[in-house]
Length: 179
Image (cartoon, rainbow, N blue to C red):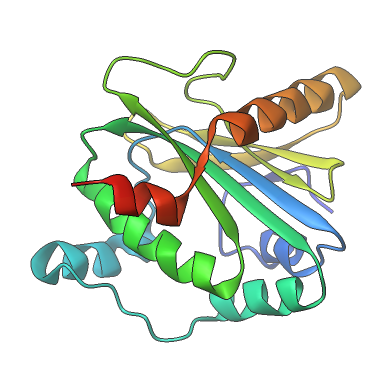
């Protein structure tokens, strides 16, 4: 298996999600992700305020994992006020949450950042041992996912995971609290 993916459609990248045995965790810190597969849905949402809630292979995979008792978690640090992208992503999060992914939000006023968490550092942690650092350019365009193998880096990301989970609120609670 490769240690770097530059294409999110790479079957090897997809296999990381499909082959989860116990868990995944995702820390998201960017306010905009410019990924081509979301362009159409985001444009439609910005026009109508509605997301396409048709079943997707992603949500079907989430449901299959959670039905087997796997824990799928995601925390996104969001600066308020929300960007257009984040408004779209919140709507998508609701659908993924309904499928079984535990999605939480750490809201912060623009210009502030939660203590103990890195800024502009995203990662996926599969089964609490397989760490993938996500790399984006300044506009949120995906560049690469790179496997991190050092014990120190894995321990650091596990600490960030614990901090993020302790500060986050479930996406549904966040949505209810927003005006």
